[in-house]
Image 1 (cartoon, rainbow, N blue to C red):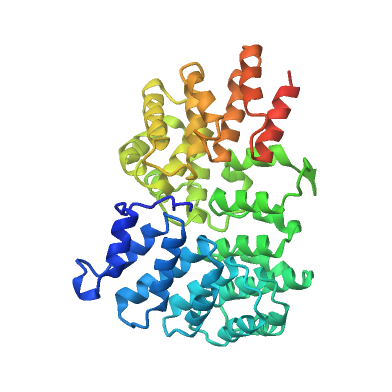
Image 2: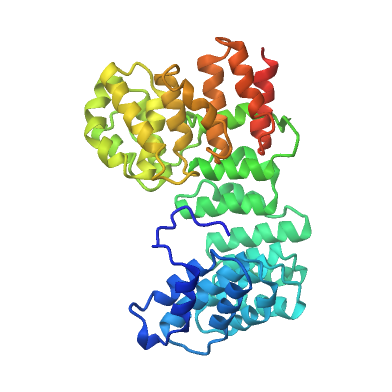
Length: 441
């Protein structure tokens, strides 16, 4: 089973996890021990694991350690594709623990539940505003429950529901009915002040399969990973261009994330204080960070560096700020020798194994290193193009962009060997880029 990127709980063996689950609550060292046991047990697929997780669900205890463990057990059984768990997971729909109910709905969707009676039970949950109605709607749509359409349509007309619930309802009706009525609302949601609403809107566009809205998603001031996911989900397979968008240049534009290509919803006056702009790169709302990046890109390097330098250490530990610092380094030129050394250092730090493989700033780090020292980092290219070493396809694509701009044509045989080694890359966008480069010789 795939482990989460930020899984930092101390590892438990299968035997230890099983022993913990056999203990009464009074014998636990910590109240969270059941949760930890269930969490780690799911890393050991097999009948013994499934049986132990099912026993957790069978418990009638209402004590908090058991309830919290149940939530995780439901999640784990779904990820293990344990169809035998469906009856016990269905019983969780009746729980007073709304988070357990939420996990149960998600799990039934993941397990492909096709039981009409359970579908009705899930539809009834929409009457309770305390439940996660967004997740319930999404799950019903992905299960193809057409009987939910009348209830979902009522929610679309309900002016009291949140934007995120309304967006999910619009996407669900679009998916279940094949119509795009109200779909223009999703375009407006992409540019709302609340960042969570914008994130939800991207997912809603994907869920509704509204490929006509892809152009607007690409303009939305959200983290690049959201726009990249939308491109992957909505781009027609084997097409290099569609709706006046060219695939390879679009991917490149997403990776070289120039804020001038986005539609801003916030702005700063032209005389903004440089210190405030640098602080803005640490803002957790990307719609507020992008305007700061845009202003800084247009300023003289020698003017902004005195404000950047004191913040390098803090930025290197903040994955949001680190993204914007690396993009600033990438999008500006004329850095001095000492400045390039610092940029090189922070880029190498960004590529360390301490960060998850799929984190958003690693492609920018690769491109910075290739820009600063194309010869120095030449030996890294093979690993950066290797799926086993570099599983995030955006990093491999970023390496190909750098290969094209920094080294292409300087050593034809060596470059052809590198490109040939990744012609069978599992990601179609990478394969397209490789073929483009090979054909450019």
